[in-house]
Length: 202
Image (cartoon, rainbow, N blue to C red):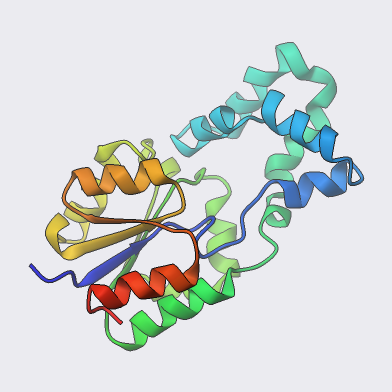
């Protein structure tokens, strides 16, 4: 079956999401302090629990016994979330626009806490290009769990065999491929454009 639809991850593919953008400000450019905070306090595993549906109050409560002195920095994760995303990744957004202009249906499948997604959806005009967006925090299941891929496919009447999925995390791309979706590990817009041409989508 011809691949005919493209599903995009958001952060790291279309959006320049990185908590370091915020915490470099909060720690006055002290890279060691930033990395210590992101590996010992607000860790990837901690953030993933919000991606999978945990609310932020519960997330804060989980950290307080060991990190109460860091509370202002923990709260900034939600209250200053905009500053983690200074802008789009323009080269990849240009690829998405070209797909849209060619009539290729676009979807988004993102690991994202439900509390911070709505404001970001309003910030970025390209979000309106998607025929559907599945947000892990709203579904209470996060990539690479295969259930979230099934949610998107079933909700939007897609088959795995006709879909391409683009994600900057190799585990997520592999999870999609295991279901029969064409999984693309995103490294650069140039490489993505080449792969989409190979699939006759560009």
